[in-house]
Length: 260
Image (tube, rainbow, N blue to C red; front, side, top):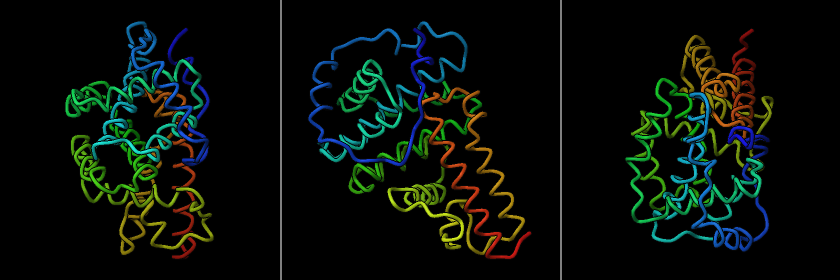
């Protein structure tokens, strides 16, 4: 069975809560030493499929590494990681693989820089995939630690390795916080400050700058483009939700400024 065929469903909804982490821990205990040939990427055909497999692996490895950055993984961080797995609609085999990657990322032997450089090679010429990768990491860290402690400086380091500036990181964080549980606002209720943060522009930006930022953000999150470039199908819902948020932010700015 092809790996890409298993990565179907969607990154549905926002990061949500769920049962206590006991089920996650019990499952992890059974799969730490498990080996799944499907996750290695060795049987994949085509560059996009290999990229999808690498993206999946690095997503959970880095998530585990960030969770362990303070020395221990809290129940809240475990629940955040498990929520991501649930939103990807992973089946038991995929969950086992994700947990194995997450566990590897927690190891003292895990080399973050090497993992990120490997991801960059896998996504060569596809910078929007790297941006989505960072969004998923920041989103999970917000849910797991509210980006407190070691998580923020570590993810700023990851951002730098991916070519994302500290200012871009701030804008990205603001946009992701706004689409957290209970915070997603329709255009008519969105403030100018919120809308500009989503488009990653200053409130003083000109109409032309707003338009450019809008097109740039739509291009970054276009689901069909990302899928063709190797984003796992299970993560496309994240891109779709971000696209809708970007459209609503642009509509809010247009309405506030009277732009037709």
